[in-house]
Amino acid sequence: MRALVVVGLLGVLALVFVVVALVRDTQSGAGIGGGCPEGWPRADVTLRERKDVKINVLNGTDQPGLANKVADEFRNRQFQVKKTGTGKQIEDIAVLRYGPKGVGSAHLLRAYFLDNAESEYDPKRTDDTVDVVLGSAFQQLATTTEVNQSLGDLGSPVAPPGSCPMQQK
Image (cartoon, rainbow, N blue to C red; front, side, top):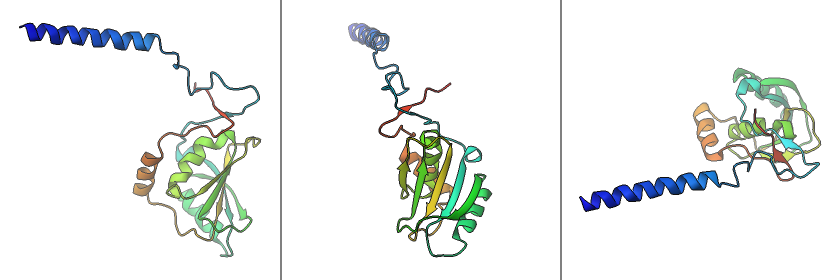
């Protein structure tokens, strides 16, 4: 009986401790842009659904038609392909170029390259479109299962250095 009273008392004390910690939490606004330095861009860190992601697919290889082929694959996966074209030749698998409004979209796209695409964040870019530049090391987009596993490994999108996360509505 005495042990039961001690366990009950410890449970009550633990509950009081948790409530006090939550009430006194000074970091409740952390990560949502509450203390953003003036002039820093607000990054949209919302993980987008495929149908809401706008992309340009650029061929950074000497392989003719690659951008159109991959653009069709992205369309079949419900992405909004705005345009295709040729980009500067690169050796990487891919390069993702985006601005503050494209952070969440670029995060999703990283999973389609199994986090092997280079990211080029431009804080001055004002649109929400991500440029996908395919490089000579590109072979194929990840399967749905691989994308889901990669998203789990990547975690949630975060604001790039020099930006603050946009407050969510």
